[in-house]
Image (tube, rainbow, N blue to C red; front, side, top):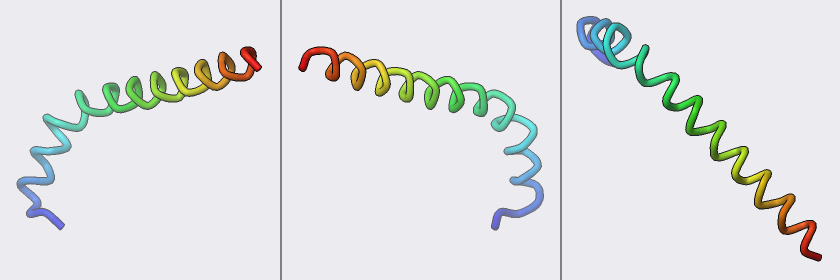
Amino acid sequence: FLPDEWDNLFVKYLYPSFTPTVVLFLGGTVAYGVFKYLKAGQSK
């Protein structure tokens, strides 16, 4: 879908720093959602 040169640059420079950020963001979002859900369940 991209030229090989672009793909190699993306994998070499962007991918290693991008992946931990995405994992942290998803983990934080899930944890926040679970926390809010549990807190809402306690208040009833």
